[in-house]
Length: 169
Image (cartoon, rainbow, N blue to C red):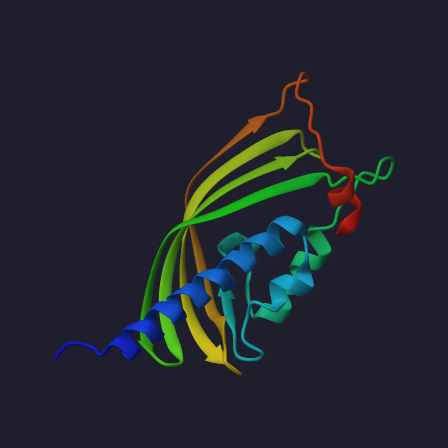
């Protein structure tokens, strides 16, 4: 029996809201904003497995994130670790009005000025989502790296960071 139009519309709206919360998550990681990062997850009962970075709940990972993300150069205040998270190829399955699953491919790039290296990584997220107080949130998040490259930054590399970004996080 075919779905009625209201059920199809509700499913499309759920997928759009889930994609939006995952995009907020990626932007929070890039902006080095632990509060925005934490707000992407359910209030209680979350489970995050980021491999070497840790296995914990959203509060625990936000604490890890708060510790490692805001490192700055003591002389000019610029970030010393610059991240770029691009989540692509979302595959969202809405299970019911309040539960969904999803997978994403991560394209990650990092410039680490403390170690003088650039990292490029690709991996896969497997998520579970739950609607909480009318908003879709991430309930579980598992990340598995597929491959990575680390290469030294040459002496000729110049990194430009916008002043408003360097002072806003």
